[in-house]
Amino acid sequence: MGLTVVIAASEAIPFAKTGGLADVAGSLPAALKHLGLKVIVFLPYYREVAEKGFDIQETGLQVPVNMGRRTVKADVLVGEHHVVPYYFLRRDEYFDRRYLYGTPEGDYFDNLERFTFFSRAVLEVIKARDLSPDVIHCNDWQTGLIPAYLKDIYRGESVFARTATVLTVHNIAYQGQFPANFYGVTGLGSYLFTPEGLEFWGNLNLLKSGIVFSDAITTVSRGYSREIQTPEFGYGLEGVLKKRKDVLSGILNGVDYTEWDPATDTHIPHNFNIEEMKGKSDCRKKLLKAFRVKAKAKTPVIGMITRLADQKGIDILSEAMPELMKLDLVMLVLGSGDRRYQELLLDLAGHYPDRLSVKIAFNSGLSHMVEAGSDMFLMPSRYEPCGLNQIYSLKYGTIPIVRATGGLDDTVKDVSEEGGNGFKFKEYSAAALVEKVSEAVEAFQDKKTWTALQRRGMAEDFSWSDAAKKYVEVYRSAQARLLKT
Image (cartoon, rainbow, N blue to C red; front, top):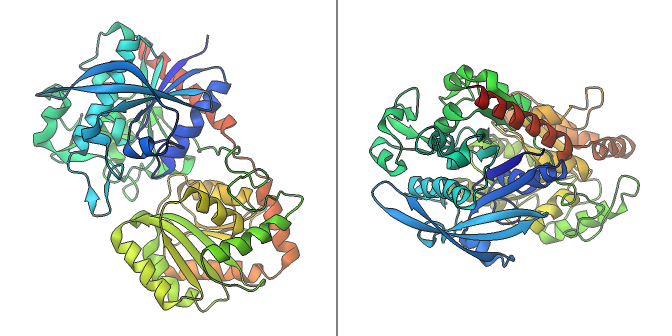
C-alpha cells in the first residue's frame, strides 16, 4: 500500500519562487507520485500566484484558523502541477503582497503571524478533508511549527494518529526568529517554550521547533548535513542537530530534466545536445545580445544567476573584480536580493561596461538563456546547502566554477581529479577565486579538451528518481519510529 504524503512548503515552481526550496516543492512531488505515493502539496496563495494566471479553482471550503486571541478564515483553492494536486491557502491580509517574505529593505513585520496561519491552516484542511496522511513533509522555518502542533494542540486527533513529520532544512541561516512576547500567536502550550523546545536565546525559533519535534530531519546534500553540525555553519543550532543526528540525513536535490534540458528547452533560441553542440554557440550570441555586451570567440563568457545575499560570495567576488577584469573574459550576472549588493554590482558594471553586465531581476526565461549561452558558471558561495545551478550548468555544457562547500562540493569534481567536471577552490577568498577563474580561462583555449570536459558534464545524471527513493525510505522510517513510541 502506498504512502499518503502531504508536503507543506512556502514556495514551489512554477507558482512562486525565491530559491531552491521552490525547485524541490515543484519537482519532488511528481517523482514521489511516480513511485506510487499519494502526494498533496500545500502553498500560500500569494499575489504572484494569482497574477500568473494558473488554472486554480475555488473548492468552496473555508477553514477556521486559531491565531491565539482571534480566529480567522482560510479559503482553500486547488490547482495541479505534474498531475499532483496543489492546495492554496488564501488570506489576502497575509499573502496579497508583492514579495513572498519581505522587501529588499527587510522581512515583513508579521511573518510569524503569516506562517503560523499557514501552518495551522494546513492541519485544519487535512482535518476537514479527512486526508489522514502517513507523513507531513515540512520545509524550512515557515512550516517548522507543524511538528510542534502535532505533539501539542492536535495530539490525539484521529486523523493524525499515524502521521509522522519530516523536516527538510534547505538553508539553516534562515530560522524564523521572533521576540518571545509574540509566542501567544502560535497557540502552543507555554511548557514548550524552553531551551529544549522552541526557545532560542530568549527568542522564539520556528526552525528549531521543526528540528526538535520532527520524527526525521533531512537536508539537501550529504556535505551540508555534516556542515550544519559545526559552529561555522550551524548558525547556533549545531548542538540541537547533534542531539538529533541519529534521525538526520542528507539527500541531494534532484533536477527536473523535463524543465532543464538543452535538447528540449523552450526558453532558449537554439536547442542542442551532447552529440550536436552547435546550438550552444548560437545561444551564446543571443545571450550576449540580451546583456548588450560583445565577446570574441576565444573570450569565455562566465554567467552567474544568484540571490544577492551574504551567503553567495558577493563580497569576495567584488574584492576579486579588479583582478578578474584583467583577464580575457566577459561576466554576466542575473540576480536580485539585498539592496547593498544590487547597488554594488551595478556600480562595478559601470566601471567595467565592456566586461561586466548586470541585470537586477528574477527572470525564469533569461535564467535558461544564461545557462545555455554561458561557457562557464560561477558560484563562489560562502556556503551552499545544495545548489542547483551547478547541476543545470553541467547539463548545458556550461562548466561550473565553484567553492568546495555543501552540495557544490558533492556535485562538482575539479578537473585535476579523475572524472573531473568543473573547477573547484577551497579557501573562501578573492585570491583563491581569481586563481581558479584564471585556470578555467586558460583551459578554455584548448577547444578539444574543453569539449571533452563539456560532454563529461552533460552525461551526468542528477534526476529526481534516486532522491525520491531516499525520501520514501526516510518517510517509512519516520512513521515506523513514531508508531513504536
